[in-house]
Image 1 (cartoon, rainbow, N blue to C red):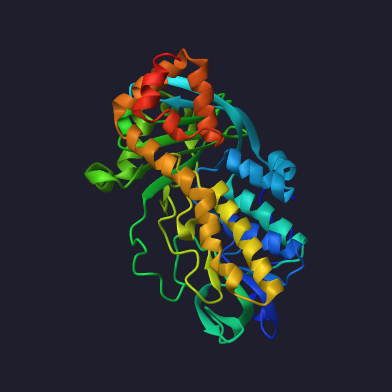
Image 2: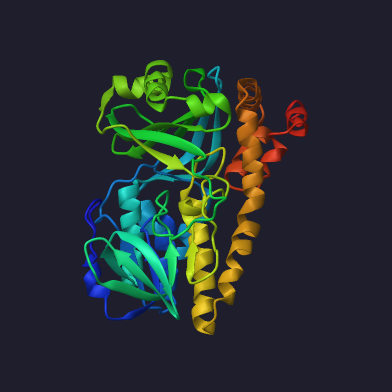
Length: 406
């Protein structure tokens, strides 16, 4: 396939009326597409509903780290994504005072419009239907759910529904009162073309963009994703102006300044909210509907990376939906929240701690400067990224003391 054009049928919603689907997945991001792919592979009649035709632009850093790569291997899609993306073997971290250290690892960059298209093509290839439909609401009925879509009086029917609509929670009839109304973080990004040579992902906590963080991710073929984000913790985080922060990064952060000086920005600056640490819509609140991915707050605190964890929750949801369909019972869905909590909460706790520590400039200055001369500390940082090392091994007083002797 080309790097932009989908090679699968995109149906009208009306074409799915008149039949009872086993499952409907609302939202064609990484979480929803992973769930659909796994359910289709289990021979269920599943449809994916996406409000925009593919390919469509999504605000994202376009970076894949170890959790995303593990999921792609599980789905049998690693090689096809790697062939269409850009492989890198290191990430360079910059502290507020511009100390820098390279962290080894396996990384991929790929534009989200292309990444989602590859996942959708795989899901359709395994038997899922893909329809362009803006779902406005879900109605529970005995033995099924009915979906109300914009522009049609017909209702789509399915035995179970998986909601994976990101920040848009309209399809969920009544989110729990405790659901946060504000995102955990916000981020902006744009694209650039530049003749600068780049062989690693760059993440910056430069003084010019505090209390936020910035990134420069090479996409190959002289294309770059540049962006910055800020966690809405404390007064400074809540008051931060991301457009001003982004301009400061381009002006004062040397690697960003070099990219622009040797090229040009090629897209408008676009923003998106991030929901982190499972602080979103509940995964399951009874009935025949489950929620996964960014809708439930799967983005990692500290890194702002959300693709891998969204895919993991999509796969867990597919496992439980598959069991529920086979058993003809909703009881397996009741176990999904605990399964997701058990798999992800310990990691989120560690990354929440890391985010709090790095909100203090002296911490990242100290640790990154120490890591320049410490292979053990660099390897520990790599372990944090690939989830083999608890972040508290670095981001704690014990970790700080240990770094002095590494």
